[in-house]
Image (cartoon, rainbow, N blue to C red):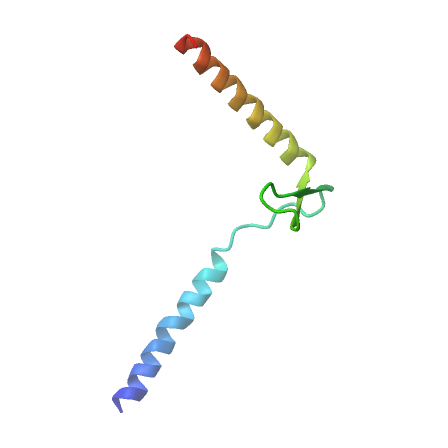
Length: 82
């Protein structure tokens, strides 16, 4: 009798957790935007190629972030006197 009760209790607890997980899924990205893909080789591997696909907006955001990082590093070096 206690085993049946334990199984029933476990099932009752597991079902709402699955429903909550499905409701809190992140919204899907815009799939209608054109994606641009690049294939590149990892530095440490001559055999494994990787593919990276991004939209134009994502590429621009990455370029902007890289530019800001370079500017920040160069500013830090200039203020330190090196």
